[in-house]
Image (cartoon, rainbow over all chains, first blue to last red; front, side):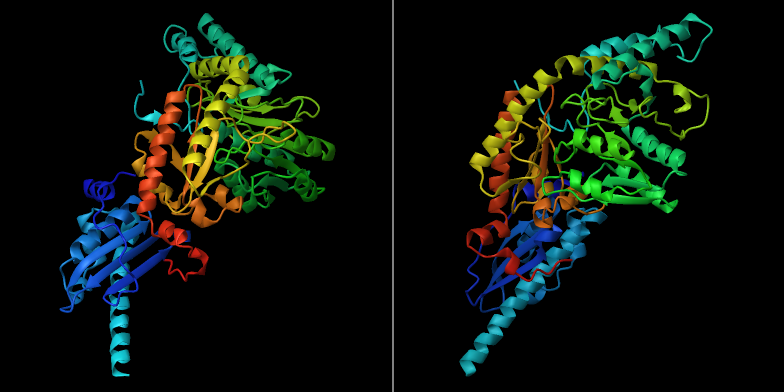
Length: 134
Length: 414
């Protein structure tokens, strides 16, 4: 399979690899995909009080395109508000990385990972508000 | 001095041995005759050269007569001719065929075609090491079974089948026995007489001969095997395979067979040592690596269980295509879904009962005649560095190291 230069670049120098504390209330964690399908992405965001994503980290089990998609996703959502990040579409990632049709699912997985991390963060915030009320 | 990229995909194909190439060259130019031309010296020269090649190939597999070698375009054609040719000729006798789940697609798809034409095919399961058991074969034989096809050695996981035992069972039950011998010829012991083999597919390019030429061994006595030809035409190869012979290719194939016969034992010992060195380096440096197929490669009683040149290994928690991407100086292959057009992991690994999670992480190393210690050491070093880097990127490796049972997680799939 021939990869685009951008996929190779992200694969060889992935941005924001790492782990945030999943028990921190300001951290949202998205874990999507399945080992049996050959790709799993974990994307984490740390959100400040203004709703801005201060930090984003990922780890990915998958092909080069999956690694590149998640690396690019973390790069793009850093500094954005969670509302802005939630609008990021897989097509944008696929286009930027020139993913071939057979690899589009990698970009879909990256979009799902962002959404899932945001949802986890929002759930935690809602739970915290409930706890404060209670 | 290492020359990049390093070739470690000898299961896919092999380079032509220079000694085979040298014998071929005159048959492209000055001795270009058609082996079927009976009226002049050009034809006689070509026919004689084909005759020499036929004898050399017959001798390599211990066929009793050179005429038992039918030249084809390669193993795919040989497999098609064996399966479909026997099925058509013997269909009055019965319409049941036995094969295995881990055969090459040329066998499996030929069988599928026959199923559409009213034949019944039993696909034998294999053990977790990839073996067909004699018991399973015995149980599958029916009164209407005409043919059984089991490969000599598997191209992905290297399993060497107990061909002599299986051949004996087939002979006893009056079932013709075919083996796709492509991966094993010149690498392991193979003898059509001792093993009761009635038909065998061989290809030149996996034994250091040129591409585009192969052979089907067809036994001529005890029992005399009959086939219906796939190709109609000039009646070449005793009517079994019409079409002008690829004389230079056949000459190269013949020379490659002669070299294989003279050198294979020594070569197998040398390649085994290289393969074992690679295995030892990888398994010493890395945790959670699993060999797919039989290991150790030799049984306590000395039976060879695995091709000398094959190492198929799963590096848990890192996906195969991403491994290949970082091993760009190495030419290897993977059983991962992502490297196949179908996005399905290897059917061979699945037939061995290897979980999809692990099938996705497999890499196949195939060593051969021109592999060196330096190449193996480099391959080990670059693989180890690559796996470590990718595991640092893998959420699964991190979770496994934290003691999380990955099977306890409700994965989303897609």
